Length: 497
Image 1 (tube, rainbow, N blue to C red):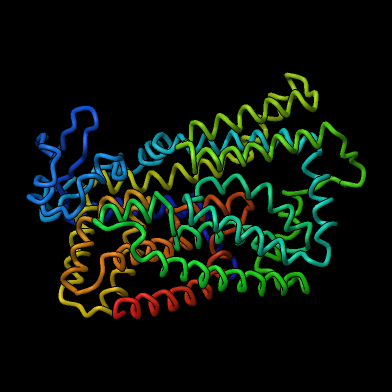
Image 2: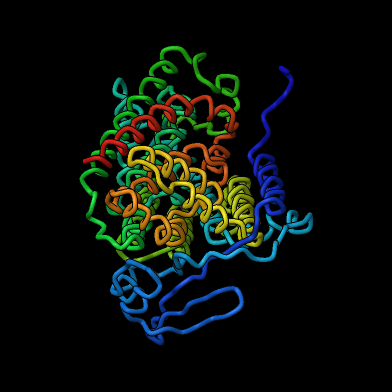
């Protein structure tokens, strides 16, 4: 048994893809009709598998379809994706996915995830250019000297900052860029790579789980539930502060043990390998001249511009990727890098993150199998039926766990919201609780499973530091259990208030 090794991220995802392929043979195929708003024609489009019908864009149409959402949510763009129409689920002819579909799924997934894959590769090239200049190494050396004796502040600041991005505009996929940048900082501060991964990934996870004004989860879910997004806001703020505090204390406790005794690190056997992977040059031999300072300023500005663009200017992956590409070219000019050296360095930097990019694509392929197999709506239908007749406290706990399970099949927060809220939100009325509690169960269910969900971002995040998933599970499970208990208790209590 000692010689057994936990599979790599890619192998885990291929195993999951195989299991999902098998599920398409076991779970009945089914589909809800969907409704979308066409801005060009000012009409609703009702779509089923065999027909498409145009309907008047009116409140009466929504009421006839038993959709308790104000018309304005569609016409002003708050709900921009097709939503499921309650009561329209029907079983369909099975669409079992065979061996050919299984082997094609990673390729389809890579094509579908091309936007984020190119973002990751371009960021890898940018980091390669900056590393070649030595600016990054010199800056880390200065930062570590500045925080000497106060390294714990790094944990608090990074985790809190990333969580603020998560709770406000859904800072998630973008965090991939920060792992190769910040993990060397944590290593230089005498922590291990797990601490670096935890601060960035858990900061984002807690922030998005306890979203307050995140348009990709809280706002779109509230809109799809037919309520104002401010309803339940104070509970979400309280949960953000509570869960973030628990998480930071948990990371600090682990980090302190590692700093005092490196052998306490969960990945101690990889210490030399990871330190070599993120090897820093001797920063004392690097003159931090104006060119390196300007290069670092451009590098930092890329991330600031990305955050502003996503949160204010409605940017997405094309714009973000373009910013990093232009930034890498500017840095090449600043440090006077030759054209040949620039291309070679950029390609080498991109190749360092190629494994991460492939993991993202393979994970998306799992979703492709479920969509093509028509089993996602079936799972939603039976999940909604399961909660019928439950008491308030049990209902919130079970629905949270249902959302956690559904997130394995539908990892997208916005996709989950528009697909499930029109079906799940009315269940609150039958139980006698506010619909904002259903929105909260959606957020916390997704958020909890996100900590360990192999079809999410965790495998890609771990791949940056060559950390095995089994090591992450060993680190995260105590915190996962604590957060689960806290969330279930608070949700149950809030359902009776």
